[in-house]
Length: 188
Ligand SMILES: Cc1cc2nc3c(=O)[nH]c(=O)nc-3n(C[C@H](O)[C@H](O)[C@H](O)COP(=O)(O)O)c2cc1C
Image 1: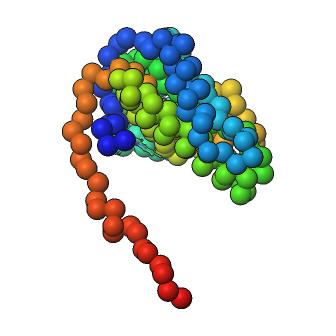
Image 2: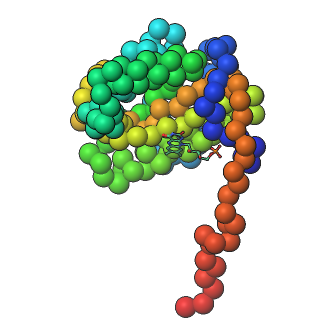
């Protein structure tokens, strides 16, 4: 848990599909209420990476992230994003089926998928595999959701996780003392 780092820089080598499947199988032992196992995963690899990256950048543009750029700079930014998406062997999109339109049941399922993702990150790290959990407003972008073949009324996107063997492992930036976050309550 302490040694795992978020990886930005990956080797080209793909991870064997059977190994990835085995790791997701372990991750499924995450807690999930009523054993709903709400996690669903789309994995973009090979030539599918460029198209997936382009759809993400289109969404960034809709959200105005790149609005300060001239046409020329936007073209360069698109090229850089394309290089990034092609530099990572696998992009896993985690999502779930909506059950009560953003109500408590959806929150429970969302929490379970987050536990699943962290299980996956940890078991992957134990096999020398790096990951980067990303979540941006794009996950709420209805046009993006439709672009990748899902339905905003039926599906909630949860994260995009980059996966591959690490090329460079960032330094550990540590954590603040946990005692600052704990209150022990013993009296009325
Ligand atoms: C919900 C969520 C969203 C995140 N989004 C991003 C992101 O968009 N870009 C990124 O580089 N890292 C993202 N991260 C990873 C964190 O930045 C990272 O976990 C944090 O900096 C601590 O580093 P470590 O994972 O190496 O310990 C995200 C993590 C979570 C849980």
